[in-house]
Length: 267
Image 1: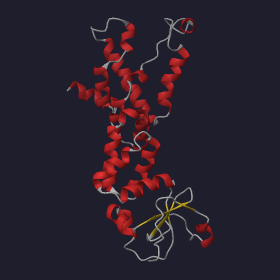
Image 2: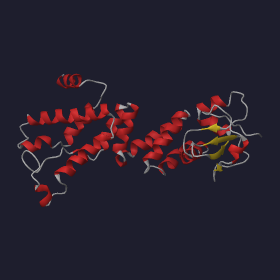
Image 3: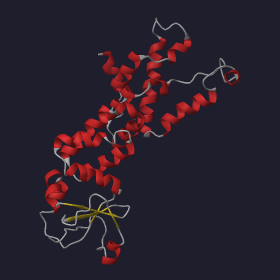
Image 4: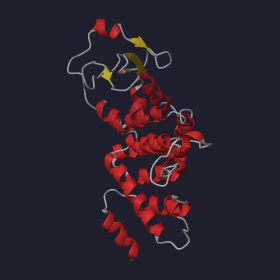
């Protein structure tokens, strides 16, 4: 059977000399497979069209159309496509086992998510999201960044819930009004400068709307604590506890104005 090769993104067909120079994947290399995929790091991967059609609407639509033999060029690394093909040939109950092998590598999961959504592989996408949610505590900041990129408030709330809240402790200066260098000469875990850098670094990678939303909610909650009779000292106003973070997580939604959310609280 002649391999089915459809070029996905390039306007020209790959020549014989070009394709022959590509590296062949060590596992997904069955010469009888009728589909040839080319990764963005120039690796050949082979797969069977009937496997791809079973899990992917993208491939199902492609293979219903007659086309001349050209490679399917996917803008993903071979490592990601390889994991995808592992999932394609696996029974559905094995999806979580395969994905879990990569749960400690968020960049891999993120690339895989892009690929399964691009190929409209719905069952794999569902399993992948389940693994991401279950392991949110391992990469909450990266998940919050991803939520900002996707405009996904629900995902952002999941990420905030999983955060180590110490990462968001508001930095306090060693002096009453500014840094008096006491932090550098006493047994402080961090200097004032390091505390400020730590706090700023968390917000630096976030989407601007998500960063603003989180900071606004933190400030509002601190203001609410200032009127709490149980808060005895001024510094405690900035010390957000578990109940404060439950409120903040539930309130997080950049699509709604702060005024709207506060009015809802009064109802």
